[in-house]
Image (cartoon, rainbow, N blue to C red; front, side, top):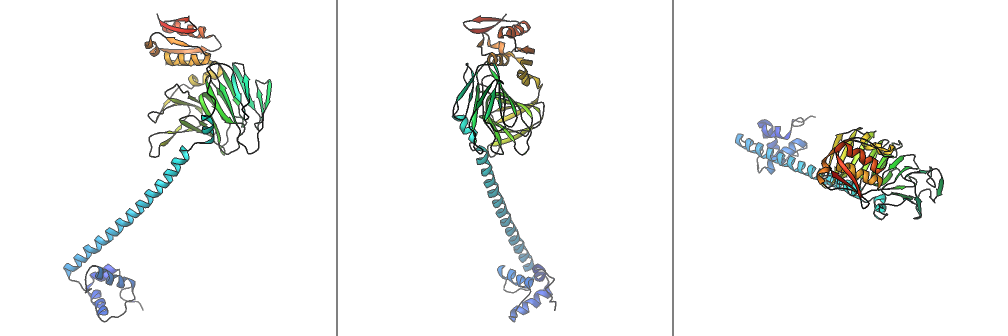
Length: 387
């Protein structure tokens, strides 16, 4: 049989004089109370310090305030507990992400131990057994077979190396100033490596992650494979791609690292100002991203892509570029020393194409005609003087 308290809440019982009186009589006669809400009403009365459950009006107000305070305290404790749990969970996840993205990868560790980029000499291909192949041509081509064992150099010379099925075998190409090389990797991705650059890469990609390490400048044309993303790692930046064409420039003597996206989509992973020390930023085609490692910031701007990709095809294109930056590129490309006797000249700007098949003297002569400077050769150095 349904009792009088079955559809009532404890607070309703306590504030209903008739129900409270009836319940109080049961308490006095020590009758067993089976209803949960009625039992709760008795419990609330007891913890509130009331011996008699039948309350006066002012006592009801006092009890109501006590109950409200108890409930609010309970809710606050539950909220704090939940927030504490969430904070701990976020911290654990965050630390896991922090250690994951900041830990040294195999290729970074290998790069720290690898040879430095020479200022002059031949292009060098360093194989897994530390055997070096010297390449004398100024514009060379290196092509890998699918398994990474066979390598063709300038379509004339064949080189072989031992590559086990599950082994990660690292190769290195070192390109001095005045040289350039084009590399076709085992996955058919193509890379144009500029003067004064070094590229470290697996002879074949044995894991799901295709990863290479760059010092200097290179243009990448990555073969599309969504299941095996491609990563370009530098000393302070990581570029993640699925299949696209882009340029990365990370010379040690440059203040910033740049990424220029021609097509597709890339994601930059860098040491920034976020809570866990790393930041991510996506790029769209036609964009230049400049990363400043000292500030931990990336600035993206729309640019003329040809300015950054044209060296692959043997010419430079400049649009109001400062002379100082232009001379730095020419110096690297031809491996010549260029000095300005007036540092204010570095701020002068130049626009136009420069054919890199010409000699350094011819290229600098074109610049001299437009911005009114004189080019002189003194003690194996090129001196730029204001007219």
